[in-house]
Image (tube, rainbow, N blue to C red; front, side):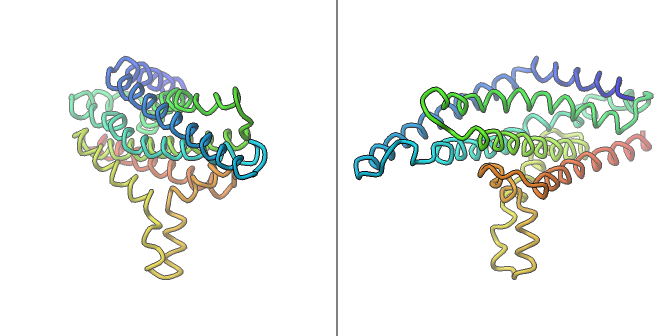
Length: 258
């Protein structure tokens, strides 16, 4: 059962890194994140200098991780929200668009194995991307005393957010043979999840609680604060599982109609 999944995952992973689009997006993302990191560090030094000038005390009294790393990880998530739909849009839509889906559908590989393989390849790509984008955060240990636990918590949160983005993108890609439609659908769903709680206060207490729970950013912010809770972990697992189950069911339906 695992052999087809691993084969598909490795094929997808290699295909992503052989694509100029993936390398271009990674290079652009890293350049933007590095620029934001340099700006955040410069602002931190300015605020620390002002703090010390007014007799605030030592450098350790301003939280380096809260002022530099947490905002940077938050911005990385926003950038991934914008960029990942361009990566996930081709995962399954291209199979249908280029006519390779009938051959794949008639093979012994099950829809579940196809979905897990595609998702596994995407996760490998995201692991490389998140590791690369988080490198500036670890540089802080060279000249300061950041909270390693909080950085690790934020990194876990970023990986979970990326995995959720990927699952939603895979679900959208399974529903169409047009990659651009898949990208737009993915972006729309992710944006709704991101801003779900923005209108909660105007909708009443009960609706506010529901929208607050559905809001992806509310759960992600806890990781950025250094808080790893089972409720947040379950939220991201549910979102990812829902996307994968939808994609599987969609492929089952498409397989029957082939």
